[in-house]
View 1 (cartoon, one colour):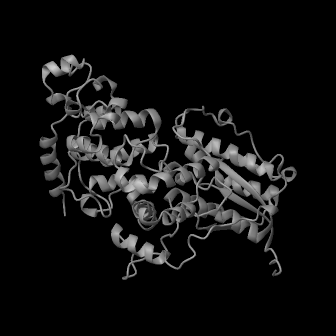
View 2: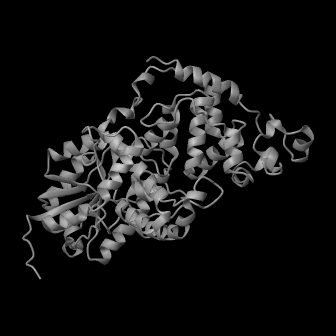
View 3: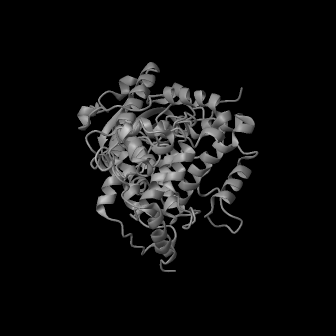
Length: 472
């Protein structure tokens, strides 16, 4: 055996943000490599929390995941240091009291995170490492040396770079150097949800690293049918791992390793993981997409939609059952199937003619798996304003989408129970049903269920005119 390399520092902080786990953890591995002793810290960022409602599923998920992580650290003789405040103040304060010479954390590509980390780096020695993605912006460029703007060539470059690389190698942090619990007493502040001013809620999935890995393992059994089942919301055909990727309770490297191990059935799911990285890449190179369209010709576009239609969309009361079922599911659970996200986003922007940014903000408030890069990328794709977006002249017909992807109406019946007694043929478009069939099913249009707020075919023509006639 070779001699152990001498440590550069005496003490380090490993600052958790989007990596709420202990396994396959690059920042923790790096902190252990650099320092003789490492303390693990998490800051509830008041700059983010101050705008959240008192009941927030994401915060509950984070809190539960941290409780599990703290228990694991205590079993190893250490503990998690947790505070609530501005990280620019709290990280230097914890580092000073603990005596940390360096702070190690995973790189974050969002504009606020980059500003925050730059400010922290002015006050302490801050080392950031890649952990949230397999490949980041500085690693993948087109042959012309510029960032990719289209997914397909990006995905080809991603896969080519993966071949023969060590990018998926597991990070194996040495946990023997964790700071003993006794040395961390007094560093944490009370961090129950009530202490933070929040309440617990119900989650549609279990939080934490153990639950994430269990879900990933369970998905292996479904992976061979992923390509065929992934678009049907009534079928349990997706991984349901987006929340775990968002908060890092599952390593993206571990997910990609599993995807490759699925063999011939892995390609479609791996492509979806690469879409996630493509949107992270776009956000890194084009942070302006947070507030404006990626395609410059749409930056002055005026959406003529009306407020009543916006409210109907939010409430799941548009008269289009597949849209209403999707929105009601989102409002009740914080989850929406990916196919449904595309349907409701297309409906908002191209049927109701409402600015995609309003829908993007609504999803940001409601989704448990909200991720700025993926949410922005998905909405701009649907609105035809983004990179490699849906062509403006391709407009989802919500009725055809409903028939194709919820053919028996199982999903609609679950979330729009007032339509449950309609036949499969009538369920997708109650306004086309015969009066007697509506009567037998107990449906009174305009009372128990709304008439459609718009005519899809009329709105389609308006959307085409709006998008094709925008300034060039």
